[in-house]
Image (cartoon, rainbow, N blue to C red):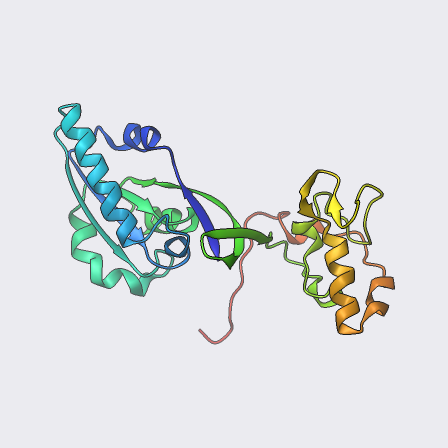
Length: 220
């Protein structure tokens, strides 16, 4: 899932305060799971902005709404009338959703309410951990499902550095050594032979060279 964090309130207010009408618009998938961007968060943020407007005697009408995902056209059908009439949108989606809306509604300013942080999972309620950098060249098949690109502070692809101690990274005793996790996992799977396999130097051109990446499913 994509994890995001709400921007400081003062920063948000400075972006939108000069408009006469604003729609605070939630996204109810990834960023709703981390309690930063769903309909509930949109409603709360809209209320806070109304209070700020009252305090500063700013004349601005603020409404709120939301859809399931702000990165696909079909989900906008239910909010089409609202968004066509709005002067500006404060989007509680990740950066993908903000850009999607900005392209879809070319004459409407779309502002980000969140900072998009990483791709992660939810190991326990309220905790979100980065697990993937979407590098475009996955090695999880030979590392026991543990990503060294993301979870190793040095992005080492062929075993640990000399700084790990008792399974912890030299950067911090609170960070697990990714390669210790790899070894533990491969051992549990009975696949320690994979530890001896040499991974070539990573081809980072699959990550960034040539501009934004795309993927097309044939037949659509």
